[in-house]
Image 1 (cartoon, helix red, strand yellow):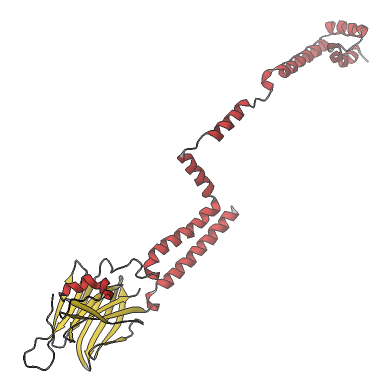
Image 2 (cartoon, one colour):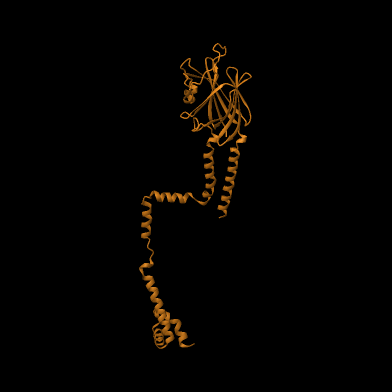
Length: 178
Length: 153
């Protein structure tokens, strides 16, 4: 076994001051004259210095104070309507709900279109445009008067027959009274 | 993603089913027409106005009579091209046949007879739930006014 092979594993213990005095002196003399073991000594010293710096640095400790301050601020701060709305949207418009929104929208549209179908007269009163058109009329020789009054949406067909014989026994028919 | 795709498929199928049901229900050929007839005596023998005619008050007042009294009210449901017959006081009869529905309008054939004698044959087109007045035949010292309304799809 060469001197280097014997000294090299003991360099770490020597640097830590763990070797007996005689052995420590022999190691020191060898390291000072041997470039390979001298390099080993420098690398170990550099590693020790790095570890020491890392362990003694203040930044190595986790700092929770700013984190808790932020949490407390969020708890105590009043949310704006916009934040509330955005939160509600995110919570409500989840994909499954969006999928069912399609038929829901169709139901609403069909219901709107069908109100008059299922509940005729629900809106009450006469239709806004009580449109009546007479396409054909035959009164078999009688007179007829047609009245269309826009204001009240009224359509009247009035039948009457002017009596030629005043002494007729048939009841007199009324002329239109409009 | 599979869950979302399944949901979308289900909702689309559901939508198609709804649309089919709605289209079937909206098919007017299967729905009868509701006909409503009100026979009113208009006269100048009093100033009474029948409270039951309140919904028609504005329309009736167009005719300048002083008194209006509801004599009879009748409703019938009749299929398209079918025939509904209503007895009118004074031995008269009113026959109504709904012909077609188009653009939210209903076409009615109306025939008024007195015994076997025809008084009027007319074809009118009116809005759904619309109505018109047919008047003139003398009765009990006044004139009959018949309110005819139709509602259907």
